[in-house]
Image (cartoon, rainbow, N blue to C red; front, side, top):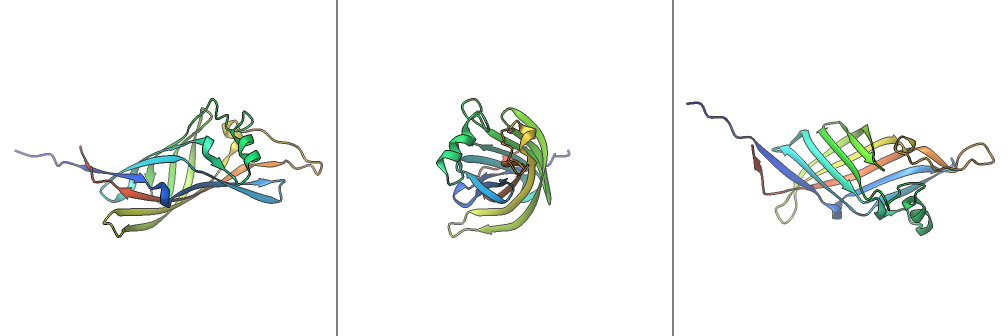
Length: 182
């Protein structure tokens, strides 16, 4: 009698103490404004330690945005941008984590397929015996694609805020002990 092999999925959770989800965007077309989201959570499921077919779920609270300027942060939370009163979550769902990560990003109820570049920095054990995995993730999106269209025309002919948003994430995952048998 043949036995069917049992596959084990490994659950990894995002470690917010050692991760950062950030962005930058051109302001007045001459400088960059950088910001981060302070509240987020994520789970990644892999087959063992193989991230190539990982299933990724990320949730970000847009109300936790921080750019170092309270007035700008409040403007970004307003109807002009993230409309956090009506949209309390930004989500990302992906299903492949090799050198390129493809997934569905949802902002303000608009979902678009995006592509991100991934650098896998390896797996290590911390002093407490926890297995950690590190990644650097970068990419670009169009904020207009997600309904973040507020802008102002400058007298020089440019615009106050560029459409292109650069995404930069430093991610550390912690392997969880509760493997899932399939």
